[in-house]
Length: 529
Image (cartoon, rainbow, N blue to C red):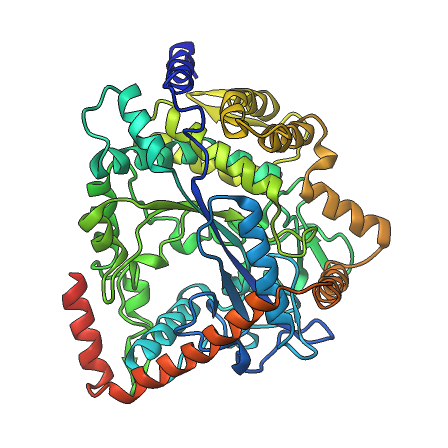
């Protein structure tokens, strides 16, 4: 990156430090969404219904399902402190495990042993039109991408900057407006720079260099074999975020600009209104059965998979893009995190603190528009790091030249020092500096990366990926069930929410009257699709 841009970043950071608000970056709101497959004691996917005691997957805000009936998704509220977030997530796990019987939550992103798409049951949300639409959408995902890929789990990190930051940053940028337009522009600058630098998240936190060999039947890919059952990428970091996982060929041609809110919405709406011949051959309503919602490039906007998304809480019946146009970007959702097999809740405070500082770095750096050529280069970098990130001497593409991953990583981490100092202001334990130091150690010693640790454990124990996943999943269950001093007040709160969610689903189902086809037509009209 040209020195002038680095100097601009340093000037912005210095101006924030001198703005008279020493805690200007503190207490941004943080939340997590964590997915896990329910599996039986033998490690195979559970085909049981979503546990009734956990409430309605349709209406429970904190315990729901993703693609599969077996894929539980735990959603925290937004908290100003990461320790509060992790405590809430821990309590959620404890509540869920009390109602799983003999079942486990699979501890890694790449799934347990699955022989075919039929092994992955589609989530069921009841008989209401809104519930049926969610299931039909998932049926479309199965037809388009295969069920095995949809069994991959991940962790999403949601973040919004505090109001005081935007007010101070507007002064730094000499903007007379610190309102929603300025904030949306800032978030889109963050999105562009995350595309530029987000490969480092895969290197530092990727924990999926291996996969059960059966998974590759659907992925149409070949990998070396670590043992008779385990396929792996020798220097891989995150197969989940590679072309074997979410970055598969089916969405390779979907291009959505983050150069502005208007362009982002334009491209998404083009994708949800443009017929796609391969999907037209699938059919929509075939012999009375809905195979997908429609035959467009994307059925709905959320089908588009990206490393990071601009978000705003939607109103009832409102599409994500309509919410963004109505009131601008409220927060960003970082979607590139693997589930950590080394943490019972799948994530830890060092990771969350690093990400908080990282997105601050992304918003403060200069962020020019991204053209098609640069986007191809950025996609290449992410894929290379996902598949070969620990390869000795690995280089990435940077402004028309090759750049050492290690050298570039050091530069990124160096630039985050001042940000971590601001986030640590008033805290003598300096947790953000400690989180940054932990990432430096991974850059200087590749064996400290979680992907390397996972592979080494497989080699040391002689276990297959499946065996390790089953052992760690069982250990995590024992950990939560053996926890002393449970938060009885919080657990009672979850029980009330579960009961209330079941009542809400019953009310929805008892009050609807229109046919599903009419409901869909009305939905498309209301969302402009």
